[in-house]
Image (cartoon, rainbow, N blue to C red; front, side, top):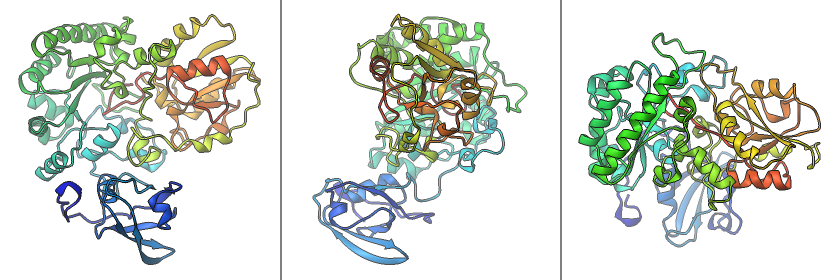
Length: 493
């Protein structure tokens, strides 16, 4: 089939599920045609999309014929619309065919460090370039193919996030525990050759790919991949469930060395390429007890969602120096558990269930801002600048995951409940929504299970300032700070 713009859609693999409509916009072509939540879409214009990307491509066509299944019966519906006009139907998932799972066995993979007994979706590893485009997941490209490259280029699937970790083929292959890791960066070169915007990531494991290996990687990027849009250097996140004997958290001295090395290479890249290219995650500056770089250093905060410049962005929003709201992507596991099917850049709709949490505290009550241990170090000076004795930051130690996990995005209900049980009743407690997917923590509990009522709030500094000044309701768009909300591909605790 030839789609809009002359694009030929490729043949499809076996479909695992049909796209199911979960919402229809009022007044949209979908509503006028009689589409309704629960309808399963068999085909649009004679084709069955394998993912939400192709769904959008097909739905953009004019005057669609849609074959659907409702109540076990199939029927055909004509939809009158202009080319490019939104159909107005939201579907249940990003992918309708089989998720391309990861066949690497990285010792630093965070999914390997999960405890048993969590919901099944959390243990699914992906290495799917489509989820990289939609949600910012990182792909190693070890399962990438010529057909994938053709689709990325022809459909303009950009940006793509790529896990590099090391440019030395032997080191990379050993880290991924996959022999294809030695050669799969050829696809990175191909993506760049075709003008695809690519963000790279290096998860630094102490004693494995730091020191001279990291220097060699930065040299390799300059020599082989200078067109990279950015290169994020993030620390290994390691939980107490890790079974890898050689993995450990960074020491202060090692964090300082990474910060210094990144600073040196920023100057070199700036001189040779006209931009700094490489950036260290906020956690490195916290670990090294160094001040965060100036906002200008981040060159537009291209990888804010990977914990690069998140603290500076939040500070600017909180102090009124930035009017637009950046926010954060909704967590490492959100693509399977709660983010919009159209990607993390789309408005989040999965938190409406938390509005049932009843507020019993008066708006004039003292406020406790719940956050992870890293977030507390960012929030504390900002809250102190308000000079208000009725507002305090409450760090929540992550005992559930343990190790060096300190971000708000991985807070779980059992830890929040433990902390709140020691807090006084009658206060207002603000909880970051980034630790929830469809109203649940990673451990399966919900805000309603906590020993104190909480206000679930979104993530930007401007809204937090407004919430502290005015008070909020549970369904408001107030905010919370997180630092490094996602561990990325095995790292970024």
